[in-house]
Structures are given as C-alpha cells and as structure tokens.
Figure 1 (tube, one colour):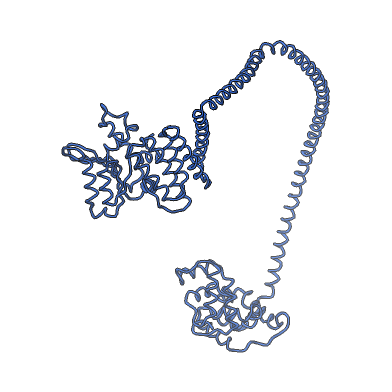
Figure 2 (figure 1 turned 45 degrees about the horizontal axis):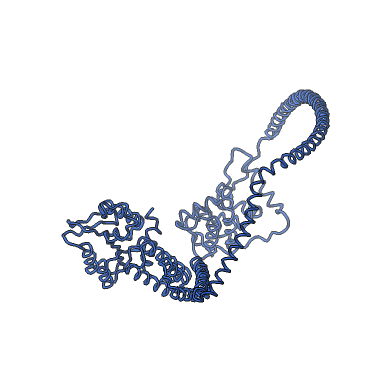
Length: 593
C-alpha cells in the first residue's frame, strides 16, 4: 500500500487515489514524468500506467507526485479555502456530498500538518452508518445554517465555527428586497422596449426582403418565358434543318449512284484501250518464257541423253560424272549441316556425327577425283566444331588447335579472329548453363575486364602493331608502325581500362632511352632503352621473373605472339593471350570504334 508522509493508505483510499489520478490533466502528468523520470517513454498511456503502478506499490509517494496531488488533487479549491475548524464542523455533510474517500484523500494531500493529522484520525475512525437516498435532513439544515451564518453577513467572513451571531436589522432584508425588485423591474422594462424595437426592425427588413423577392420572381418568370420562346424557335429550326438534310442526303445518294455508273463505264472503255498497250509486252514476255522453258527442257533432256551416251561409250567418264554429281550433292548437304551447326544454340546430338560422315565421304570423293580442300572450309569446320562442343574441355581443345594453326600460318588473322570469337561465345554459353568457370584462352582476361578485378596487363607493343596490321596498318609510316600507330594503340588501351581502376596496364616498346610515361591513372608506357633487338621482350620477361612482394599473388596477363616471351610466361604462372584474341576482346568491349 502507498504512503503519504509515512501514513499507509488503506485499500479503499488507494483505489480512490488511482481514480483521482486517472482524471488528472495529461499535460500535468507529462510535466511530472519529464521532471521525475527523465529518459522514459513520453506517451500518455505509458505515463498513466507508470503512475498507477507507483500508487499500487509499497513505499512512499515521491515528492513530485505529492506536489501534483496538492495542486490538482480532489476538491483542492474547496479544501484549501476552508480552515481546519470549518473542515471539522462540516466534515460529515461534505463527506455525504463529495464522497468520504475522495474528501479524506484531499485532506491527506493538504500541505497543512494539522489538517493531515486530523484526516488520519478520521481515516482510523469508522464511517457513520447513515443510509438512505439523498442526504440526511439534519446534515443539509446544518450546512445551510453554517452558510447563512458565515457567508450571508458581510461582517463575519471567517469560516471557522464560533458563537452564534445576531441577526441583521429587521428592515434590512425588506429594503434589500424592494431595491432588488425595483432594479429588476427597470431592467425588465428596458429589455421589453429593446425587444419591441427589434421586432419593428425585423418587420421592416422582412417587408423589404419580400418586395425584393417578388421583383426577382417576376424577373425570373419573364426570363423563363423568353427562354421558352427561344427553345421553341430553336426546335423549329432544327426540324427544318433535319428535313433539308434528308433531302440533301437523298440527292447525294442519287448523284453517287450516277457517278459510280459513269466511272464504271469509263473505266471499262479505258481498260479495253489500255490493256492492249500495257499488257502487250508482258504477254509477249510470258509467251517467250513458255517457249524458253520448253526449249530449256529440250536442251536439258538432250544434254542428259548425250551424257548417258558418253557414259555408255566411255565407262570411266560416266563413272567420274556420277561421282562429281554425288560430290556436288554432298557439298550442298554439308553446307546446310554447317549452317545449322553455326546458327544452332542447342544442336541435336546427331548433327555433328552426320556432318563428320558427310565430310569424310566428301574427302574420299575429292581424293578420288583429285580435288584439293579449300581453306574457308577449314574455318567452317572449326566453327562447326566449336558450336557443337558441349564441354569446357572440347572448346579448350579446339581453341588450342586454332593457336597452333595460327602459329603455323595455316590461318590468317581475320580467319583466326572469327574462330576466336566463336570460342569466346561458346565459353559464355557454357558459363551461363553450368554456372562454373573452367575455360581460358582469353576467357579469364575477359572476366577480369568485365568484373574489374585486380590484375596487371603487359602488352608487347610492337608485336601487337605488327600482328594486327589490318587494324593499325593505316597508321604505319613508310611501312613501319611509328609514333602514330603507338599513339593509337595507347588511346585504345586507355579506352579499354578507363572505368576499370583495379586493372593496371603497362605498354612496352623498344626505345633508345629507358623511361616510363604515365598517360593515365592506370596506364603507363615504358620504353626499354639500350640497343639491339627484342629489348621490350627482355623487359617483359624481367618483369615476369622478378616480381616484388606486393604483386606476388596478382594476376598477370601478357599479350604477345612472341615464342620467347611465351616460354617465360609458362614459367612465371602468368596468362598468355594471342594478339588476334586480344583484337577480338577489343572489338567486343567497343574499343576499336
């Protein structure tokens, strides 16, 4: 049970205190919470819950809550106005009117010590056993007697009980009554006159408004008649227009029929004249075509007859003709199979074996007939093989074949790039399907460029310029890649890595003076210095063999076709990229535009 100044409240007063705090203004409760419980939740429902918990807990109420009860508690204005003697005199009537628990709660929260001590005595005393509806008559009479004795007479304002006062002079009440009645009568007359004046003014205003309303009604009626007249006139005009429109539509239909008949007649006449002029030549051409078809069939039949005769005459010639005819049909079939393999995203399993059988038969017939295979057919076979490959290993094997054929000079630059492009596309399809990364031959460099991974890219500058003559040949000077070609290669490389800050590029050239030029944040051009051949190659090899501690685990890619550098690449663990494959990557990333 809570305590007020070390006095424990009984359960009925505790519940009365809870009810009294429920109706306290929320702004006062929030002010108490800000002062006494800083840092808590400042929601009204939470604050009221905290107050109820404090009231129902053991312990004395804090000073802030007592101060709040002293200023905002039950019947504070009434209790603070009365003295202790008045409170003692009127306690029972006030308890009946206000409620004994709430009155005692207000007395216990009073700051006057004597009032609180007397309230504690009343709490410990049993309550009076008065029952029944309403208040006891003697309590009401005692209350009114006290009010008349203490409040009616102006000479005695102390509410503390005392000796009975003598009544006022006998004529005082009569005088006060007459004066009050006279003043009230005068006020009533004044109010009556004011009401009459207002009624007259209201009557005049009503008359003015009635006259104005009558004028407006007359104007509205006149306007209504005018609008009705205009509406009738408009309806009559619309009806006349409808009749005229029907007449015109009938006339138009009649004229349309006449025009159609006239046009049809004229068209027949003109067509009969122009058909002979326009269709004369086409008819002659068609007749010539029919004659040509008949003659062509005759010639074909004649040629076939001659060939059959020649075959009967010369068995060797006939056999060769049959083999050539079969070879032509097989070549057409191979072309269609290759086209299917080159364009198929998911070729059927039987497509590649059938192509192999057809090519084997074509090869056999070509050997019998002494026909040599052509290089574009090799490229077509490589493309077909790459497109038909289904695993990483198959594609890697074919790309190694392309490397070997390019190094042996069996494939030119454009042809090799065509196959390399197909290899890169196939690697991309395999990665999309398998969600794995197993390919290489430039695929890891493509992934590094695409994902902006940390890596070092070493470029054998002059080797690239010489190998990609179809790309940089326009910038040659006297048949040699000079400053213009080097500048163009530098610009292309800058474009390749301009948005790839994790990739560093070193472009290596031969030069008499050993120097390094930083052309951008991640691109530098380095010249070997010294004399002799292959100085840039030696600089690249030295960089591969002698790495510093910061770059030991860094990926390194070297673009060159030089065999000596390739051998050093294999020893250092760097990745080797051919120049034709590098050209494919440059084109894919839009750097050659």
